Length: 277
Figure 1 (cartoon, helix red, strand yellow):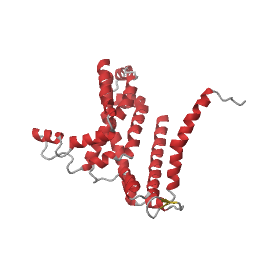
Figure 2 (cartoon, rainbow, N blue to C red):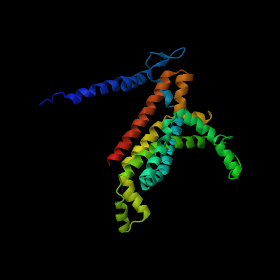
Figure 3 (spheres, helix red, strand yellow):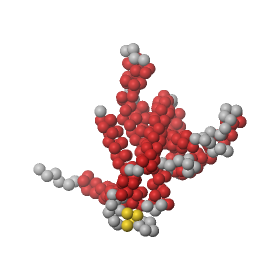
Figure 4 (cartoon, rainbow, N blue to C red):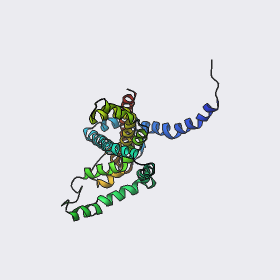
């Protein structure tokens, strides 16, 4: 028996139209452009070829993608390590202090992302207040991050994406039954067994959500590597920006976009499978 279309079905039409115009159509356009050739003066010459993908698989560009994957993965892992005890502590404090802590976590979102990146660059700069303070105390004898700009980039990534990890963990821990921990301890479980055998399996969906919220945008991040890296680091976001804005090689840039979307899709599939187990 055929089900009649109801008000709920009709209400989905604007959503489907919006997805088609602003999500699927641009993706199809990017995919189409990736199979074209670069125009003589930039732009797109509508001549079909596979050369852009063969070029994108060059070891030079694959190394850039690998560096981006390592940065995104390290950022997600560092955020998870830092966010878990912070979210745990937030569930233990009084409701009034908990509200204040949530405001502190959400406060970065009231400012522009680029403004935060510039502020962070000023803070950890060679002549910035952080280095001056630490050198005045005698704790360091040379400015931090002066030689290793990759460490500065990682510091900036973790600082900016940490709230995306804290929030899902906090929401899950707020609903967590801490009586399970007491029961496990009564049965003789030590702290390590309690965490890995009781807490972590229950928290797995929240952990995977936080990792996804950090890893996906961190993979294509442009602003932080560009500002804190000082042009000395190259990641996929910087490479895409150069291809579209400087080299004006839109077909090759589109092919790199497609490869990055394939990597993100593969990551999402792995996360979903892990969450369902």
